[in-house]
Length: 304
Image 1 (cartoon, rainbow, N blue to C red):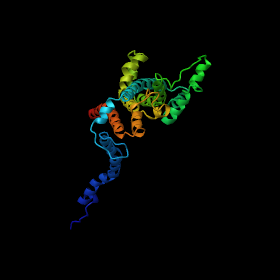
Image 2: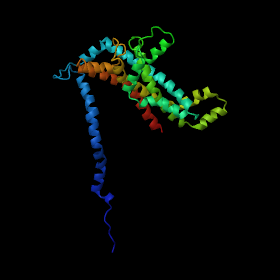
Image 3: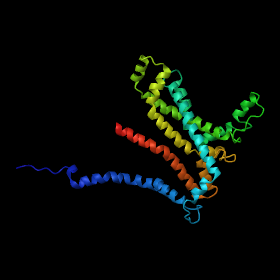
Image 4: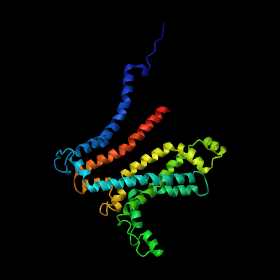
């Protein structure tokens, strides 16, 4: 007489149905929170941009009037121009400096670890604290820079944050000081993963240091450079805290950026529609950079 055994749990139809539903149940709460806190507000912002809502009264649909006002506003174009200056500088200066420091610290020498920590440490400081530190450095009377300038005989040093031609670059310099260490770490990680045999082959072929960097190292660091550029673009376009703390966009809007312009329209003028329209313009600028990056990443993964 043949012996019969009960079906294993994994072969039971009901068990399989429960297993299929299990991942959905685990994802339900995170997805719900994501839609409530991210997707929902994003669509709400798109709707508010088409209204004249002031944050209190009932919103009235006004169509594209907010965008029409926005594109005719000189302060908006000044803020956009400042964001572009910030973007270009943030891509070039921290990237070049971070890559240079990574090349220096890629080889071990006495004290290299402490130098890495010193250059990376500004990144762990809050941007608000960085803004307060540099605001004190730029003070016209007792600031560090002007005190040094007076010490070497400069009778009337500039008012760094009060000069319309200097203020934006002063804030960008403070932001760059914080960003360089981050870029350095990214490039250091990329350098550690390079194929040493390629470098040895270039050396055997007679390539000097610059030729190895130009034709071997930098091309191999291409994926890291793409990540660095995308991060720099996003950080530059969403720059707000340092401007708000150091100058609030002044003097006369000369240091205004889109994020601060949006904040002032929303919580100073109570024009939520204008602020939402500015947010959509800022989002469009970011997507122009992020979407090509995501397409490139997707293509690279498919190739491999």
